[in-house]
Image (cartoon, rainbow, N blue to C red; front, top):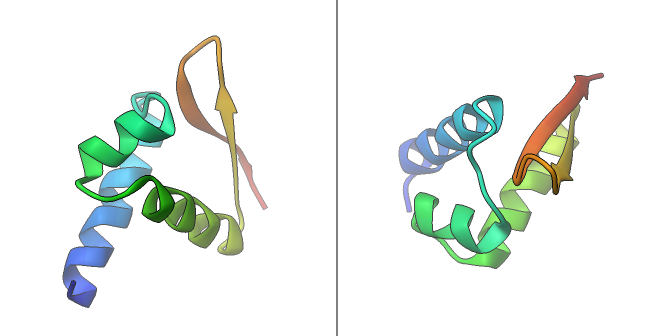
Length: 68
């Protein structure tokens, strides 16, 4: 996978989180076309960049709580 493809995937992930449209990790993996493990790696990548990300069961999506 190229750097551009990874960047596009992370941007799409951010967009899905902002729209409260990720679903569970399995659903998110399908939307992104990656494995569940890659989803968690991408979420950790964003957390390492200062994003606070939580899964909200009521909404059924990962959400940004706040940005550090």
